[in-house]
Length: 224
Image 1 (tube, one colour):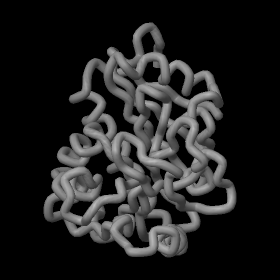
Image 2 (cartoon, rainbow, N blue to C red; image 1 turned 135 degrees about the horizontal axis):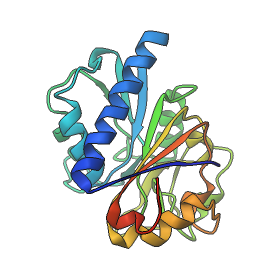
Image 3 (cartoon, rainbow, N blue to C red; image 1 turned 180 degrees about the vertical axis):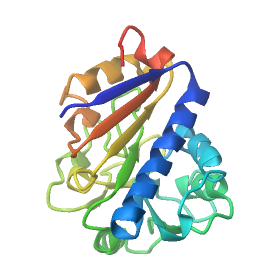
Image 4 (tube, rainbow, N blue to C red; image 1 turned 60 degrees about the vertical axis):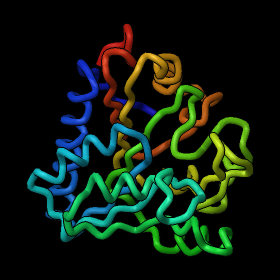
């Protein structure tokens, strides 16, 4: 798929740009259909963007926030993406839909979460790992081959935790992908992503439109 690349000076500029993109998409979605649905990955970049976003004019009462992925851990565990998401959102009145990773039957929980997803997401935020993973679609895991489910569990632990994640079919429901990529360790996977290299998990994501916002350290000699 074709990605549009925007290269900015540093992480602060990436967070500023991400907040503007989300705010603009939210306003347009609410004007067109009355609500704004987005899905958010973990990582530092989205929380910095949300810290800015909550001080902007966003139709929060009509915003529904899903999770792209989550660590299988207790609800109050600091490793949970949910804890960071809620801290970043503060007291804005968005409807946050957590992944039910603490449920006693995780496979059933995946099915329940899948049933709650919208037909389309107005925006999906994705990150990019140094190993080329995105969401919790990690290298050499059976989850990469899931084509008949919208939500699935990783087959094994990744960085100490098993994960629940949106699958490729779910990410394909995005009307707009927003990738936030920072740091020199992301330079090689970013080049692979932009080349459509399917050898990395991120290279297999497809959706209607894709914007990659990267800092100069990650972009290297790439140009926006």
